[in-house]
Length: 151
Image (cartoon, rainbow, N blue to C red; front, side, top):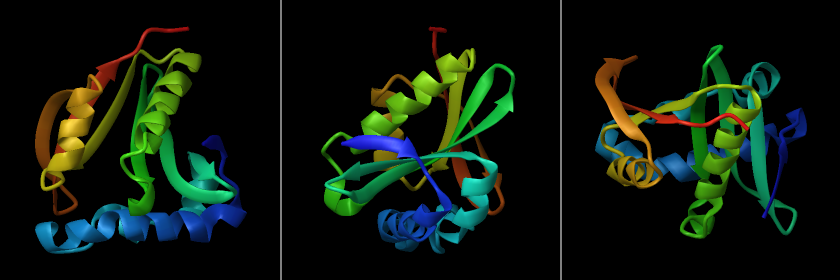
């Protein structure tokens, strides 16, 4: 698996990955998850977006955003269903942690929908600790943070 910064040419593929990755949650949440509604052209322009590829095909991505000088928001991580379970998501999350350390951030923060219980378990397994729950934009969200040491 290779990772690189996304370009505008990746926008359609990123949107397709988000659609495929989040579609199974529509029934649980009762509406499309927020990442299915994102304008990925704007996201690539405004945020730090990385893509993961295998054999020249994009299989996953992450969206990173600075929150404050000491925290990096992992705003979105998505992997094609056909590539899940092979370490792509974990590698992308590790990339986010590396990017946080390189920016001298002390933590990576993220959130997921409370209906995405698989994601909650994965984040806890990777050392993220729940920091709160709230309804935001009509979505019931679970917030997490992980302390990362500087490089």
